[in-house]
Image 1: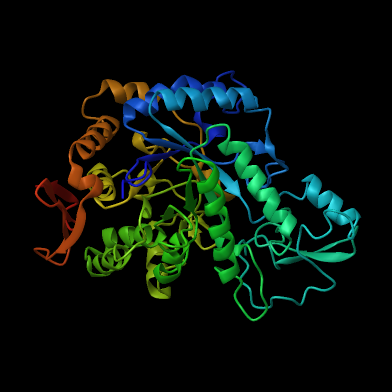
Image 2: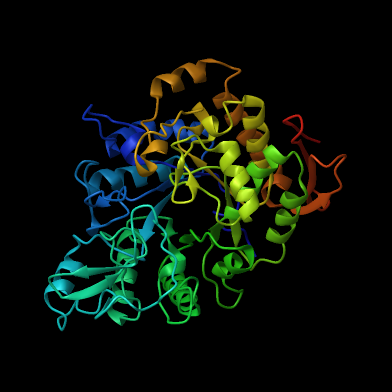
Length: 470
C-alpha cells in the first residue's frame, strides 16, 4: 500500500499567539504566520500543526473553545487563515488543526443553553448529575488547581463533569447529537483544505462507572466512526492522537487494519525515556521501549516522535523512582506543574549543544513522523516563573533567527542540514528498524533498511553525547 503523506512528514507545532506579531499589539497573528511560511518551508517542514486559534476566553490557552467555527479576532479572520492554507499548500506543506473533542469552554453557547434548559436541544450535550458521587476514583488531571472532577452549577442546580479546569465542561458523547456536531466541525475545516486534526485529550471522551474513565471501548468506537466519515468524504485527512497512556493502550488508538482509527499517535513513552537515558547514561530501558513501540502496527499508522511541545514534559509513564529522579535532574524550583516539568528543550538540557544535536539526530532517525516545537531550532529560552504552561510559550525571537541563519555553525543551520540529509536517505524515511547490540551500556545502535535499496545505521553514545550515521 502506498505511503500516506503523514507517515514520515516533519511536523512543526506553531503556537500562533507567540509565533509572529505583525502589528505590534503583543499578540501573534495570521498575518505574521503568512510572512514566515517561507522560513518554515526552507527549514524543511512538511506539516504545520496549529494549536487552537478558535474563539475562546483563553482560560486554557485556547483549549477552552467557545465557537469551533470562529477565529479569535486577535489572530485575524477566517479568510486570513484560508490564505495560510493556500500558501502553505503552494509551498508543499500540510495544515493540521487541533480538534478539541473532550470539552468546550463554559462560555460556549451549547453549555449556556444546557445550563438554562435541561430538557431543551442542548440539555444532554454535557455530563450532568444530581450529586458529585459518580465515577469515584477518576484521577484529577489538573490537580494543582482543581480539587474535583465535578462542579456545582447554580443555574441548572446540578453538577457537571470536567477532566480539566472547571471552565472546561466535558461533552457528553452518549448524546448522538454531539457526534453530529463533531462530524460537522471536522467537515467545516476539512472542506477548507485542512489536511489533518490533532485530537486533544482523546482518551477521556466517555465515562463509565467502575472504570478509570480513560481509553474506553466506546471512545475507540467513536474514533472508528470519525475515521470512516473522513475517509468517505476527503482525501487522506490524518488524525493525530494525544493519548499519554502505556504502550499497550496507546497502540489501540491506531485501531486495526479493518477498523482504523488514528493515523498517528504522539510517542509519549519515547520522549520520557529519552530524557531519562541522557542522565542515566544507559540505554536498556530506552532500547526496550523502542523495540516495543515498533512491533506490529496497522497499515498506514505511525508514531509522532517529539522532544518537547506546548505542554509539560510528562512523567506519568515512568516508575515512581524514575519520576523522582527526573524531577531532581531536570526541574527548577518553579518548574513542576501538575506532575510535569515546565521547560523548553534547550534550557531543559542546559543549552548543551552537543547533547541537543545528538538527541535531535536520534529523533529524526527513528521510524515515524518527527514533531518539532516552534523556536527550539533557535535554542529558545523559557520562563519557569510564568504561570501554568505560559513558561514554554514565549514569543519567537526573530532577531535570533536572522543571526542564526547567517551563522553557518548555528544549531538552526545544522537542523536544516540534518532534515535535508534525512530526506535524501530513503531508509531513514521508510526503512525497517533493527535494534543492534551497542558497544557499551550507554550506546544505542539501530539499522534502518530498505532491502536492495538503502541502509543506514545510526549510533548515539549517551556517555559522550555523540552520534553518527554510517
